[in-house]
Length: 100
Image (cartoon, rainbow, N blue to C red; front, side, top):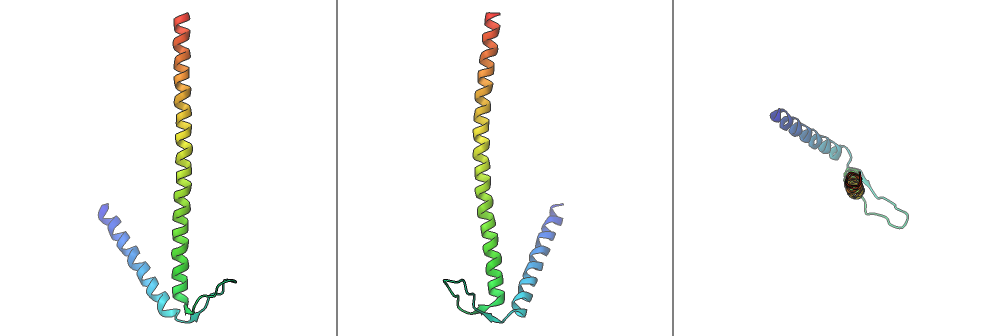
């Protein structure tokens, strides 16, 4: 099973490399990006596509990590409240047994 996963991962990486090479070869036109307050120097369309893909990937990882950190903090808080409630319930049970 591990061999199949390794083979699929290598095949996927080679496919991405091939797509990147084809993208670069077929998109050599020079384009300048105008962002209202900033105009970039003219670079190939392939470079701008790769940069935008990488920026999107990095942003999605950062936002995912922030989301996971927030969820973990909520989980810790909820577990703390649950432990407190369990201790209080155990205390009430022992109090009821001692009085009854």
